[in-house]
Image (tube, rainbow, N blue to C red; front, side, top):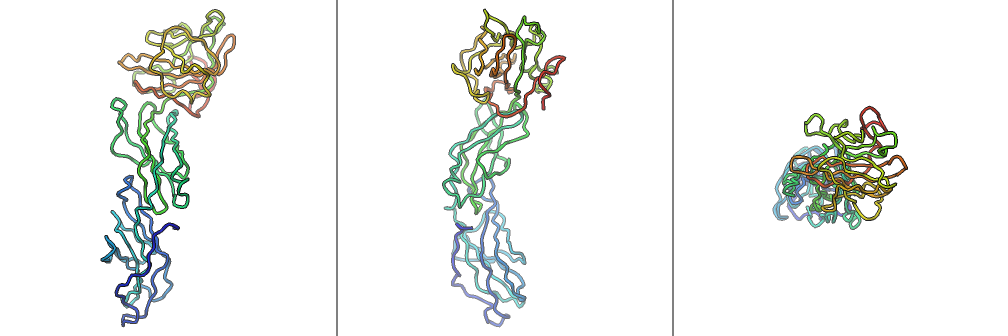
Length: 387
């Protein structure tokens, strides 16, 4: 541990060094410590001390001493191991003595100080990507970049999140650890929001303060869906429904998502039509409207992050390759649902697009990343099987 605070032998009274309690015995060398992080930077759960073995046949035990202020040291415990686990809030300083079989102790080892100034800075930013049953977290790598020799790993935490109150819970649970500035949280339930935070852990186990908090909600998605133009001879595959809760259980099953069906089916959210030679997306049901996500093409469906607050209309919009669209759908319960769509190809008789849908009522998060090319419709598997 290159940054470990180590101090020399204390000027305390020694025993076992020719005092009649057996032969002298040397102290352990290379005493070091690692804290056990708890999620609260001010309250680690324990400290683990470790040292090199004393190769002496007269060795019986190691005695561990600690001090809360660096002045008075008391016996903390004894062990035959090369480690000592001190549970609870650690004391300020520790050292170890070897004890021989006659009960005599050798000199103090080097002393270690639990030096809170070794705590790393926290990540300065945290972003997320909503996935199908997962959330990808990405954050700034400044704790490692600014202290590479002191960095050990990142710790990823989550808690519940209230969308209505825009409020994260108070109790965070550890999702996992990683050495890189990204983490995939899975498996998750689509439509259930969580709040996330990242801390940086030093090689001594000191935990930084949390990064900025980030709320995210996983949602279903799919790639490369083909829907035909109405009147092109495939009207049974010219309509699309993001989600239909067929069994009314409030959950999104695979068979209830990404439904490609007839242009005349009353359940569809939109149909593909020809408006004066322009292939267009036409909202189909009452309560469904559409808006351009931006006035320029978007690089990927991942670019469609938060649904716009204005601009929705029931008027058909041109389907243009590379452009992103957001559908606002009245859920009938006082909340809107939102579906995102990015057109990848427009032919004279069909379009191909990627889509995502947020099942959480009123939640505008739509961003996706990864996933498989899938679609489901009534009676025909168009591009594959949903995972």
